[in-house]
Length: 148
Length: 148
DNA sequence: TATAATTAAGTTGTGCACAATTTAATTTAT
DNA sequence: ATAAATTAAATTGTGCACAACTTAATTATA
Image (cartoon, rainbow over all chains, first blue to last red):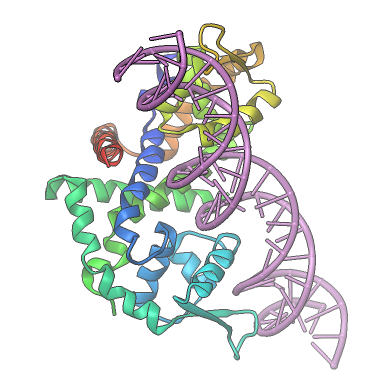
């Protein structure tokens, strides 16, 4: 028998890890009509807010690096959602822009947030507190991780 | 500009997704002395609680299937932490057991939970509430996902 | 008791995720 | 002005994660 602190059920990080995976599974049927994965959906969310953005800026917002984004963006370009082109002012940068198809997809996504809230089945107060703890943890860990 | 509900900052699921990744990054230096990844560490946690278990049972506890576990367990077998052998009573089952090395690793892990709590920098009350919401969400989504 | 159904692992193929490295462009400092 | 440092993407290699499928063993049923 393991020491109490090493028991799985006492591990808050395990519940984050497992909840994140169940959450992306929950999204799967909701994203079917857009024909994107959950990480691809996040890229669309960012570009719907602000179209035309460098890979770097996209990564800053999604906490992802070019090693993850470059192949993902290529797949999304292939499927017709966006375009990638070098910036003329700075040839190191790649500008990502939505295509008409990518922009139009926003309409098909408009009901997803409501379905998600519905599926989570959590009252507004708890949801708010929950999200606050998540964001706090995320930002705290991110600061901590990049400092080292 | 995107509809308000489609903004990234309003997405609770994004904060779960991103927090989970930052969390595994935080674990990385803590797991260095064990020379395991975070998912492998979870396997060890389960086996330290109850050594000798089928792949199925391990998967039930970690919310993982054989497609993920089989190759991971093979890597852990190669690195000397555990053994895999067919059950004589039921040849379909594979029993996973810790080696001496795997059992001894528990000592090296005993301080990890304290370091994690330290790194999260959250007061006990909030941590408790946070974990409760996580577990509730995890179980709710898991039930929901497997019903469909 | 054959055979159908179920169960347990394993396999295959795709898509992240990330560390480490490379390449090329731009900035900075000399 | 030029060498050194920095920055931005891309590349390489490893390890999950999971859907869909296969294989083999066990159990249920006609």
